Length: 378
Image (cartoon, rainbow, N blue to C red; front, side):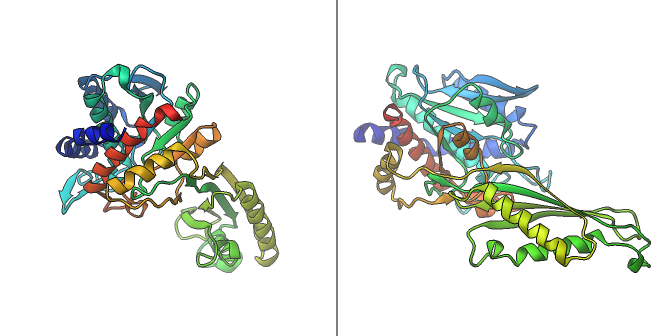
């Protein structure tokens, strides 16, 4: 196995990988509009001798499912091809500077997608079809919105393991935070802005609610492990008036073993208490989405494969928990074990200066190839 892996690693082509990543970043593929990038990847994979199959998600939107060999995959490499919308449609494309690939999606997660495709190209170059391990490549749509691509896949397939290439800086994440989305609406009484004492300001009520929640130890950033972020704050807009409606949306990322229902109950209790402190409070609370976290531990063959591979690649093997929401939560709920592992860093994802080190993308391709070789034992 060691000699075979070394041969496959030598087949990983840095120039081919760099060109592929630059091409992927240059293709604009916000969630809901992924057809161009899927057509590009489909053509590239066909040209390399693979037989990618389209799985329809909705009209003109589809996943690509690519078996490595002739056997039913027991491990899938999973990459989402969609990104958030561009900050600037004139300046979202790829550029390389000092070993960093900049551009929309370079970290989240076109770097991971490119590395997965390159891993498959190297494996196919070295191994004839009858000797290839039972692995597959899954390129999904819609992760940045509602995960509809992965949800469609899970309606038909339940492999034992998936490896999802979200940006982890190559730290293997066998544990994953849970997620809870909370929505708050306050209502007031509209009046001309010159007579605020005759109205009721919904924005002021919302600010008092948020300050009340922020004083709870659960949301103390220094002491709590819950990541609490006010994502949106909007109010009714009707000229020079006291606003009669305000909405806030909050993202909450929970440690792996913290139940979302437990946090929801705590927030509901806090908002009930707020009603006793804030005059004339009219508040509605809703929880539209929740996902459990998980911790798979490291007593399995994938962890052992990484422990063997990382020193040979000059990398430290140090596991972590993935803090963001991802399709990993969907796979786990469906009974599939997800490992989150990819190049790039969460800190730069969804920012104006998204970037990923090319050295990490190259290492990721070799890591993914090593994991595919272990698929038989899963």
